[in-house]
Image 1 (cartoon, one colour):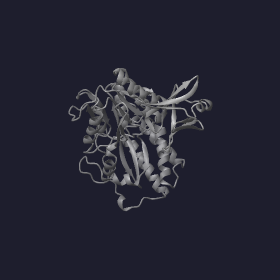
Image 2 (tube, helix red, strand yellow; image 1 turned 135 degrees about the horizontal axis):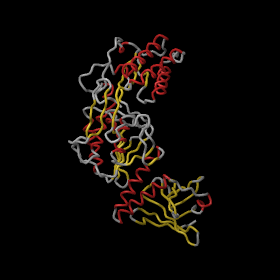
Image 3 (cartoon, rainbow, N blue to C red; image 1 turned 180 degrees about the horizontal axis):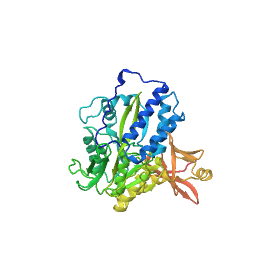
Image 4 (cartoon, rainbow, N blue to C red; image 1 turned 30 degrees about the vertical axis):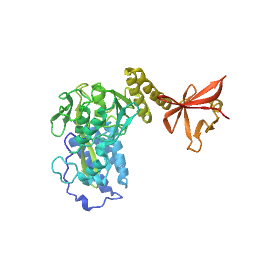
Length: 433
């Protein structure tokens, strides 16, 4: 997680912008880069009692020739692996990144984002890259990074206003590598009924100060507290994304769905290391007011463990089941329709070829045939679509999620089908061949 204050640039004598990034390293360049990482760890790493062991691991690899490589990418990978093995700290790493190396040295005027990151943030809408309405009026937002700029509050407020009109909410943090605590604070504040409560505190090892973030009191969009909330997480969710998930868990704001997160809690500072490397050094740590600790090294575990690719469908189904339990009989039928479709995706029904062959035939202007283990449906010259088994002679249509096929039998033989929607029978077809 980036420190609450913007990353400070560290002045170096090298005029980086005038020098091309090397494709090969000399031994002296590699040794100097490693020595700088050792110095940064010994001077700034957040846990003083661990500095000697981490620095010692790097010195041992250097002295045994592990870092005698020509490609800068290879050196970065080996140093990062040794840092992680010695610290189990996901924020302690070393990368060959010429763009970022130069960017973090550019002069800044106050807390403005760098030109390099500002364009990236604009193109990615500060991380709010997808918003949509799922069936059942479940509102979904995908946050790919917790970016922060002067535009971020407005973007978060717009997203909150969109979510406020939903009956349930899904926030997707899968693959979100983190970002800024201010961005987390802005979004998570909407899920509290009121502001002022202590949210989290950051102990800064560089300044010796402790910064405390609170739930924001002044928000322009409606608060979202009380709506069924499901947050998707996986091993790619790290740092600031984990802070958000940890708040959900510790304050009991919603349900976490997916896989355990990366376990990277410490606050980091980026340092340029010639030639064109960037060292990430953990210089602070968060402390949560509920647990009095954080998620470093262990991650945030989901309440509902689900493979990452299926997490959205699982959360959507859970949201619909919650809404169905509260709904009127008419509305409950609508929810149950969508729940059945999601259950068919999450736990596919497999029918043997002989069972599928019972449906094969001609039904007036419609035809059904089998391709391997899949039934195919086609009306006249329209594009064919796969049929998805749901159960009890009921199939969904892959290209038409709002229409299903309910087969009719007589004496055990399939004699026709009804095309049905949430509102009832759309049309009937008898078997003609």
